[in-house]
Length: 425
Image 1 (cartoon, rainbow, N blue to C red):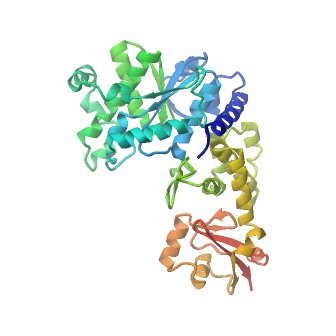
Image 2 (cartoon, rainbow, N blue to C red):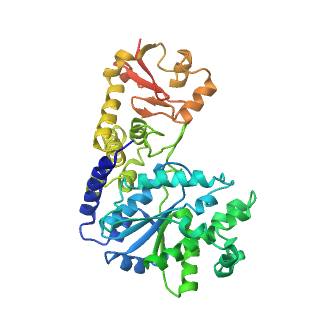
Image 3 (tube, rainbow, N blue to C red):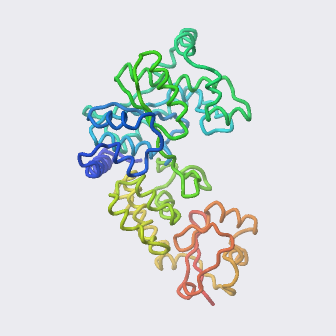
């Protein structure tokens, strides 16, 4: 685990880079340029709100696990930029809403967690928030909605808050439409009211007027805005940012073994580095914009590159993102290990196979060498990203070895720890 001192050093380095990118500009313009912003209730008002330093804004994190995953990292980046611009981002821990579970983006019922599990998850996530957010010296703010939700009087809440919501309108929300197909529970139906109440509570405590969230939170954010308007007769705002997806619109952050966790005990630093080293060619620059503090001018200089020319840029993405989350030393160690494993340094420790027929697919060659138990299991490995060829994940079950590269040898990794070297006969 990372120490508090290591976390402080990582955070200070990242925030200094964010400040250089902002350089006195309105942080809203920076976020738009880098591709974070998807929807806003009032663009001009949000921009004006963020144009004066010292503003409060918030994003919620429900504690569904004892670690953040890479999908959570994008909103943390947004809040880091806000803090670098002199604002006070509020990280709202869902100690109360986590007891129910957000139906947004779900077709099934979330697992209902015990109060003890939620509390433990909140504690773990709070520690990880310090990766990029400084909660000292009147900076970022950490709050837990369990403080005002767990002791609510249900009848009073229904009279005060429930009376402000139209069931007909709620049922048109996208977050409920998908759940309606398999059966929406009354437990989940309450979630929108509670998230709206979070906005009202934070407005009353901090004069906060801006909620940020993933694009799947749009309906919940609108509900909070409407509740503040009805109860306080004040205008507040909401913005959503892009979800972390690849160029095909598929959510990032999943592997054959589960989520890409930020906690290295759940997902090793080396596997984290390799995950980003192996992103698609169409995605590498997009992720440099969203997940690192790489200047846009530098990213633009890579736009003309393609194919193998992008490999060093993928290494750059992997290193910089790993450095932000795990620190420079561990990022350098992961990079060195990757180079060792996928160059001649690994050949001495890897089993060498001579390729009899290079016209066969890689899958068929692995099957011939008995390195996969069956063709169906081999297909599954390829499709789930379990096969890497010379440090690049191969998901094409019909792919073949490059005959020219076979002369000097090609390294194949199966799973996490199995390495093989193939050469032409």
